[in-house]
Structure formats: structure tokens, C-alpha cells
Image 1: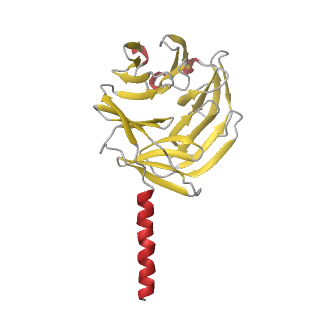
Image 2: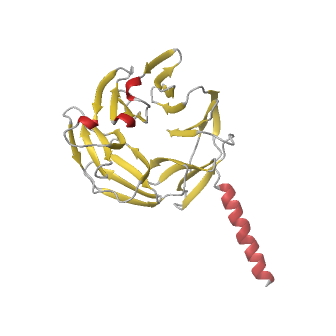
Image 3: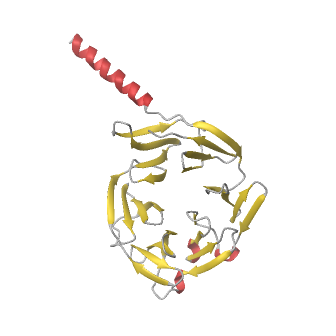
Length: 267
């Protein structure tokens, strides 16, 4: 019995140490005041993007570019993948604005006027002058060529409601209301990645890694050096925060008053 208790103690102790070792302790590299309603992130040229009073802006030092369109209502979604061609989605008017790098309007698309009926629930930049579209009318993912004004469906109808979506040029990722994670490529091939952890907000890094928060605690999910599946708490200074953004090992934490940038090295 004593030997059993001894081994049980060792097992529990090793688990506690393992859990502690799995924590990620990022390094705070900068912090500055935030007066935006929504801070959207950075591009590779060092510009920051934000929304204040429904005005979309791009800033770096003394450079400031702004775009507003009061006739289309509230900005619902911004896609910054291509800083030379940005996507602003106005859900209330089922419309999209494409902007150049100085926030001049390049194209305006009203999907309600399209020959093929489209009600956009999700959108993002894709390849070859195309936009990813999730059409609420048929519950399918499609591609819209904004130069030819042509739309094609690429996926089968989705069964469950989308809880979160995220796009890159080649894939449309989504997580449904049951936390099942899928992706669809431009040819319509759907890949299932299993269930994610429950989350309040999530940001997908790649097909095996993501960062998420739950109850104001931030986590990284991925694999450690021994190729074991792990979820690690990210130990930031902020006790509460409104949003976060991750790119190229820089984790940005947004509160109502500040933006903190951390250097983060994941397992």
C-alpha cells in the first residue's frame, strides 16, 4: 500500500510539473495607448489597422489613411491578407468594398444585385481575383470573381451553423457550433481536423496549431517537441482583454485602453 501511494505521489507530481512546464511565457516588447473601437492588426510593412466610429484607418508614424462609407452601415468584417487589395464587408447591405493600399475604393459589389442570388454570411480574399463566399441561401461555400462578376459554388451544403471562420488565399476554414473544424480548398475538397477546444475567440495558425481564449485566459494548442498534442496557457500580464491578434510570432493583446505586443515562442 505504501509503495502504491508513493508511486501515485510521483505520478501526480510529474503531472503538475508537466502542466507548469507547458505554460508559455511570452516577452513583452512594446505597449502603447489604444483609442480605437476595434484594432485589426498589422501588415508586413509596419502599418496598423483599426476602426473608430465606423471609420477604417491605416497608420504608421505620422502617416494616416482613412476610409468611410456611411451609406453602407457598419463595417462587419475586414480582410487584410493582401495589403494592396483589402476587403471591407458590410453585412447589413450585403456589400463589399475593395480598397487599394492608400484606402481608395477600387471596387464596390452589391451581392443583392448579382444574377445568381447570394446572401453573404462569410467572406475573404482568395486567389485569381476571387473572393471566398459563404452563401446563406444554399449554405454552401463558393468563389466570386469580382472582375468577371461570376459566382460558382465549390462545396456541398454545410450541415451545422458556422461559429468561426477564417480564410487564406487557398482555403476556407470554419468551426461549427459543435467545435468541429473543417477546411475547403478552391477545388471544393473538404478536410476535417477534428474538434477544437471550446473557445470564446480563436485564431487558426495552421492545420495543427491555433490560439484561443476562454474566460479571459489565453491558450496555445499544438504539438510539443515529442510530437504530443498539448494545450498550453499563455501567461500574459493582462487579466482581462477585448481581443488578440497573432502574426509571425508576435502576439498583440488589445484592451479598451492599451495594445501590448509580445514575442511568443510556441512549443
